[in-house]
Structure formats: structure tokens, C-alpha cells
Length: 365
Image (cartoon, rainbow, N blue to C red; front, side, top):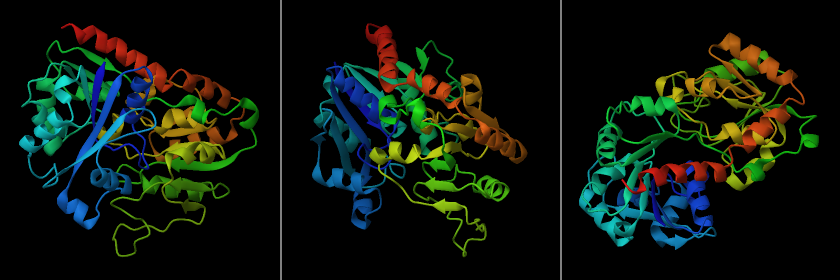
């Protein structure tokens, strides 16, 4: 098959998202796979706004990665969220061969208006990964649902927020894990200490909770890896700045390839998100990576995680319960093995087979 991914994030950067894993697995199955991520604007290129990998891919053009996936980041005159540039984007997609695609899996709804202008032979599957409540993403998502032949959401909450009333085929597939990249043998799980968070430090991250837990558990180190976005608690010029205790360490972003070696040093993995509708729908990329690495997990209670009901995962819904959850996770020992076993079932190879089965149900419709 000829499969196109239209993604919000380029492959090859700090963050590894679902479309990267799925495109790799589909390519390993022998399919022709093209992965196109959100185009970058000329002003963004001029001032160097964006990740290094995104800028480099836009400048250097399409290339085939080590997994056989064609990676593309196009250039456009203005940022996509600001100005509709359907004609330009549709011509770019045509030049990349999208008219010959058998399937188009789209998790970036901003591509939808341009797709709607094309006479496509293949099936469009909209693959929402977040709850969108306002802005251009909401309007683009409406277009995505109009042109889609099917929907694959990363959680039931994301699916329910789409308010689909039609007979559009629907499927839920949570994010998975490259199990054998992260796998920790049972003999290497014991004798670990301290707490880790690895991911984006943005508006979804609960800085207040982290500070509270670090003060309450002053004997533990709280190591935070990731890019700080929007709010930096250390900025004294920000009226919302907070003083972080010394056992919180901000260690910056790390390449995906190094993540398994980092996680194996810790006992507890945190998913400390602000409690809002956006986070209620998240299928955290780090959940199964933590579990496969042998960590106990402490996370905000979300509808998604409650439904999963996983071993070695302690949920909280307020600061008091977060303390109880962290204390319990810190006392657990060999039960982490159960978490490893649950993560094994969620390998991306299994996720891809499940999605392929769904694709086959709409292939002839």
C-alpha cells in the first residue's frame, strides 16, 4: 500500500509522537510510506523559530530515513495557524504524490482544508490526538470530519469530544511503546530511587504540584527532562514565578535515543498534568515507556487512565491524594514487573496491526 501521514510534528527531533512510530511500523511491513509534518513559514525560517530538525528538513528537502519512510517538511509564506494557504499546500501535496495514496492518516487537522480541494483516490482517516476547544484547530477539525472516511482517536475522551453523529467508522487506539527499546529485565528493576518526568514542560504541566511534592518528599530527587515552554518558574520577572526547592532539577531536553537509559535510573515516573478537559483526553506517550522501563507511575486521574486500570499506576485528583500516591509508589518493589508485562502488549507493532485491521474495514467502502 501507499500510505501518507499528515502529522503535527516532524520526525527526527526531540519528541517522538505516534505518527513517527506508526509510519516506521507500516514501512517495516513493506508499505510505501510518506510522512509530511506541519509546514514551516518563511518568517519562521528567517528568525530560526522552531526545532533544529524541523528547520533543517525544510531547508534540505525530502529524504528517506533509515526505516524507509520519506520525511517532508514543506515551506509556506505564512504560519499555517494565521493564514489559510490551501492552494499552495494542495499543490505541494500533489507534488509529493498524495493523489496516488491508498490511505492518508491525518493527525494535523490544519491540513484538512487543503485536502478537501483534492480529488483523492485513497481513503482519509482522521487521527485526532488532542481535544480542541478553540481557535483555528476547531474549524479545521470540522473540515477533517467532513472529508474523513474513518476516525481513529487516541482516547475515548478525544473521540467523544468530536460529537460524531454520523455512521462514520470509528476506532480508539491509545499511544503505545517501542517495548524492546525500553524493556527492563526484572533483575534490574530493584534498588532504584527518585522521581522523573520526561516530556514537554508547557501549559499542561502542573508546576505547583511538583513543588508541593518535592517539599513533602525532600529526601527524593525530582528530575525534570524537557523543553520549558510558555512559563519558566525561575523567571523572577514573571508574576507567577515560584521558588523551586533544591531537590527539583531541570535537566533540559534529551534525544529520544537516550530516553531508555535515563528512565532506567529511576523508580517513579510522573505524569503531573493540570486537571482540565485537554489533559483528560490525553493518551500520554510516556505512560508505557515508563512501565516498560520498570517504573511505578504516579499520574493525574484522567478518564483515559481510569478506563485502562493498569498495574503499577497510582492516580490522584488533588494534592493530598498525590502525596498518598507517591508514597505508595515509592514503597512498591517487584510489582513493577506487572507494569512491564502490561506495556509489552502495547508495543507499536501491535498498535499498527490493530489500525491496519480497521483500515481494511473501510478499504472497500
